Image (cartoon, rainbow, N blue to C red; front, top):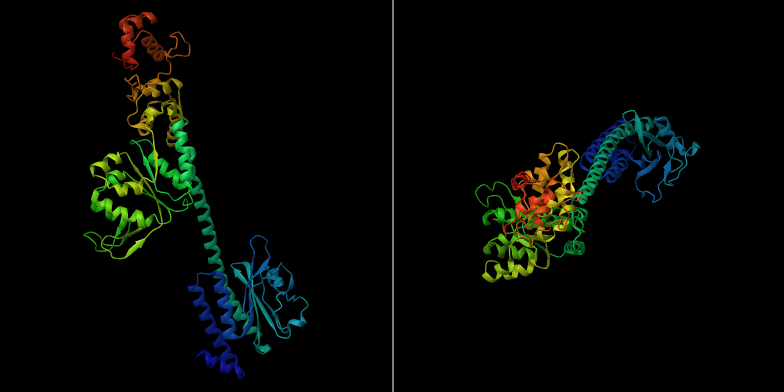
Length: 520
């Protein structure tokens, strides 16, 4: 039977059997709507439209309980827009509130005969009947479904049963919608928590240093993070270039977007192209699926290209186009893709020399070198070593799940080392020292066991105890021996006399305390 047949039968006084057919069709249509729509309010509005079209239940209304107040709020209303100011009913208030309070259906043969009907919506015909039923989830009432049938009064019980079936279906979609809402809320909370954690781990507070050169770098990072400028971070390996890239991204307007990283020196050109640009299915042997490259993954965020100075001249031309136009094609593809991202690159190479020798394209150099940030080696800011060491010791302590500390005497030793591996070497040294200590205190002994020795270069060494008296009670044995050696011009026999020892005794202590004697 078609929709037109149903309508024609109704117009001439359809029997209850035809009404049953209309209701069955309505249930079928309602189930289809509930199974395909993802917009909750749109779904409810579509359900009310079906009730009006197929069963002529006019002015259908769905009210749901507000989780905050516990009141019923009108959520969907057929043929009339839901009021901007929410229409609400508390339990026992009006006909709708009575259904909520009792969790039982309610039939009115004529609205005007029941003084409880408040007509806050102003859409109902007071001379027609009204049927309202509770929307249940298990034993709990979560809302009310109501409307005005325009059939004869004998059909009201059948309309009530039909609306109860529809309400049961609505209850299931409400349950699913609330479950999805709870899951989305939990995901948002977890996302926000992770964002706070990541920003805490990669924020400015993790960039340690108080020297003038580091203060300048902090100012540069804070300024450049606000904008979309390309940044080139330069410096020796282990100076913290990736840390700068993290700080720039997570303190920028793109912080909610992805941060994608790639070490360009780790891959040959053939793999680097696929890794950065992606590839189409069948582009080469083993390309069994289409794959997005790092540039696509970084859309709306930041891409960090480490060791950018190590890419070949042939690949530099391909990279230049992406940096200039934001366009590229996947390997094996013909479609031009466009991305919106920020580029932060890093290198430990002398790019100026590479440009002069022809190993690095000049146009790519100027495209990358928009905002250079130069990270100083650790040997040029040894005043930051104590703060760095304490920060790293705390980091290692969290990783090992125990309390750790480092003595001032150990810090003095660390300040005399050249640190060719920079901060990475310092962290490795402290982690080895942490393994060596059972009591959680890193001192001279633990540092000496890691193999770290004082620099033999007077220019780079910063002796913490220069000029210290050998009888200073704050000096430990190792520091006292070093102070005596310095005072004696590193002549062991003379230093032994200052300490009241024999040359053999001081030689033994120099060996056991891992003191590197300077040669002049």
